[in-house]
Image 1: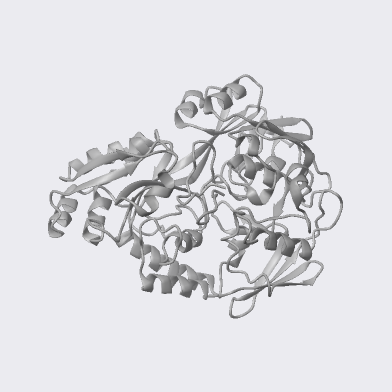
Image 2: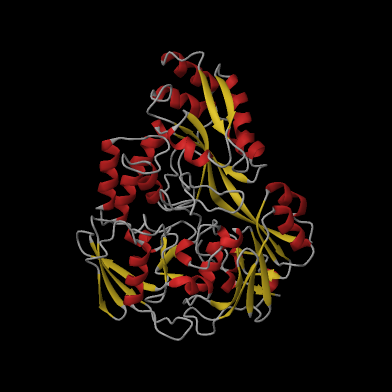
Length: 524
């Protein structure tokens, strides 16, 4: 498991992280046929056939153990074979999956969860014991499973089965957003006592497809599970093919060797969009693009300097230049389009005169600062160059420093003053708790304010959703005014499919429920 401290979408298919030393994030919600890519002409879903999907992979070390899923390929395979109690909708709110309902006590520190009637691929029922076993396996101190940090609020020693399909979860503190924990990346339910090497090679889950074969680093073949609780998939079979280079995935799609190619770049999308040979699917609001200012050191320990940098950015130029236009402008807040997003704040525009005035007030008129970047993520080096030129117009000299792809994410957490940053989708609440609290393990901006921490605790102990949303808005207003994340855009996540592929959800940011949702796809 890699240390994805800067949850981001890595070129080789790494997922954005939701936790400190664990890694992953992006997410979707079921819509009608209007939300599907070209599904209108597909008509009624057709049963049968094998869909071949090309993903970047992880080589010979790949496993089908869902608790180790870090790569997009891992997660796509895991969600075909397994289920979670909940998953993230298109707005990153939690939606029931194996859980049919959840209900808290008045103090929000005990939650009753009821399971639906579902079976594993060997015909055995999914029970409360399986759930508790799965969660206890994830938090094993000897292991580094990705959902470990997400499950931290649960006291698993005190939690218990109250029936075959009912569980009482005891929490260490009030947690209003407890359903987000159930939906956490990597929190899959496995059969009680599933363990050993055989488990990672010949898995039994409760997902829409069951295991057929697996060649690590090459391919995995799964077959429709007819007794799936949500209804059997349309496809007979699903094959995951590993192709690490984007050009290889595109050529396989164009040549008819695969029907689905994950993670295409904007240039490829522009070259093929509307040409009729393949379909291009854009998953909006999938990846936050930002510059990260360290608020605990000069010059960014002065909030006037941070505000000046907010006003230096020409966001449209950054989206057009660094993302080739494949995205939308940001407003210095994470989670555009997600639950609790403060969309009432005015869109920030470039204002060089105001920026110069703020820098003068702060005694930073001829400011020089180093901007750390790397080729570790698409658009990073381009964004750095564009922002350097924008800053020069405000009298700021930016020295762009290229960092190693191998150590970039770990280095910039503590070093430097200004850096390129990216993150995949996750709930706004998770973004706050993991990156913006005094004790957050991935606090890249070094934003540490006890009154801000207290607002988060207030939100988590507020039962009424409207009142809770008001607290989150207060927190976002503060970040908008003086935070350390200059969030200039949100990138599309781009997928290519054969024209015969129907039912692909288009309103599902990568890593949400309906991203890579192969049980809902069919071949026309």
